Image 1: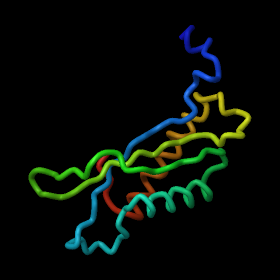
Image 2: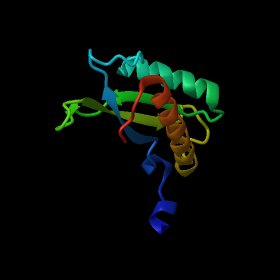
Image 3: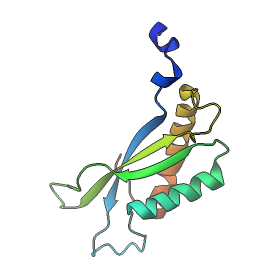
Length: 123
């Protein structure tokens, strides 16, 4: 704890990453829900944060790893990284602990909304 309190702002991480695995819809999927692509997820995240968050936290979405095949059913899933950060010009960018809590709150809300929009989330 002492070391953490004495870190300089240059040593403090400027982003916080969380992950989410989402089932990949195949041609046989007739749920009518849109397919979760990086572009679709990024647009959804941007809209969600714009409508629901007072915090000035940015989120970028990227694919993390390869598509995974579930061994018993053959169903596909993809792991995505959600990277939360404060804008470069943010005055409180060094208060990482405060905005990490906000990022976790945003991620929980996103997870629930992504299930509604795109379907099942694994983890």
